[in-house]
Length: 498
Image 1 (cartoon, rainbow, N blue to C red):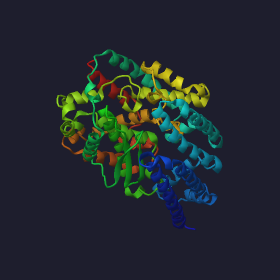
Image 2: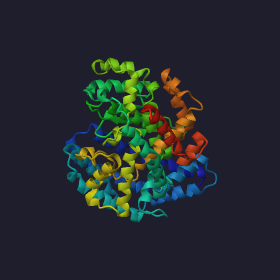
Image 3: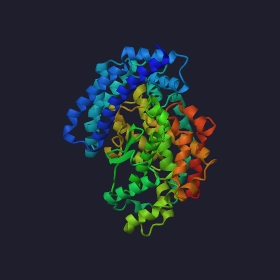
Image 4: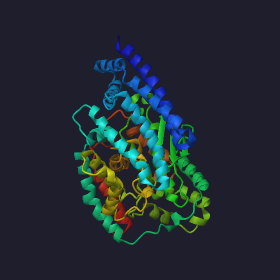
């Protein structure tokens, strides 16, 4: 058969796979937002079954043979070659796992997600612990089916960020310890910034109105996306024109929902701005986690915590919350939004202490897979590390080991990409400033210019390139974490007059 004929057969299979993916993704989104609680068992069993059917299609020997034969063809375009390269690479992560193990694991994680929510609301880690221990055991078991040179935790680190290993992450986090921990101590000893106003009563229905004003300012296309509510905010991109973000409203914390919405909108914007050429291909939503987090963290921290972002928005927020904010200036609001203080909740953490939250999770995950920690003592280990690194100890599970959803889905290796993505973002912003006056764009209500720069230099490529290649395309340089360190040092030295 000609290459063109083979590619047509390949696209037919990809279309079938995309239909299954759409069904599963839609159901996952509904299950976490609006689906009735009592329907969960029925839902989970059928979703696990459909996952098994999709597994059969993906791992069908004839389809694997088709992809491998295509990849060997010399007359593929560069884009076609890259698409197949990443698809075949990712196939290695599950093609050798027995189907019954795959389906069992799928059903386990769906059940675990339900129990995690219940346990968090009840502040009872013991409810969730059996599910987490089973997930850990199955992740270790599935490593046996993974070919290649990487072993143990390195396998999962590379799944989320290709090329990253314990050795490389250790160097990255060693730099954070060396440079940021002393700065955190200096900030902790400095005069506190007043943030009390942010913890008054802010009705959820009024917060919701404000979130839509923020999305409008960010030029978020509500004909290609929507915003829902859930326990733990996430983004689900079903297609280029179906990007679903979520948030959680805390009526005693104004800043929480603001920055979670901006963060998730960053994820959705990345997918929405992938080029039309790639929109229905494997690499549409195949970016590394570090790259994806770089865009959400860029929006959340490098832009939304900048005063210029609020030049148009803050007066509108004062109108919505006249009693709470009438005596609070925009500068006071910005100072509070950037205040650094050791705290328990990762998603609400300031930029400076945030990487320590990630470091804690990274060290625990390393210990889980190298056997250096007792998995039957995870809650105590978690609490001890918070006391060691941040000087505070969780008093309840919802503020400790149960605060994050990730482990209920078996996402070991994901957490480090949050800190790495923040590092990528610093370098991207540095490059963007060579072409744009970022503050002027935000002040003049021309956020679209920022989005256009991101699209041209990053977003349009989807997952076509390795992170290291994408960084060079966008910045002309290799990744340099010192941009991140210098950004935080300059920002917090100035903010706290150190």
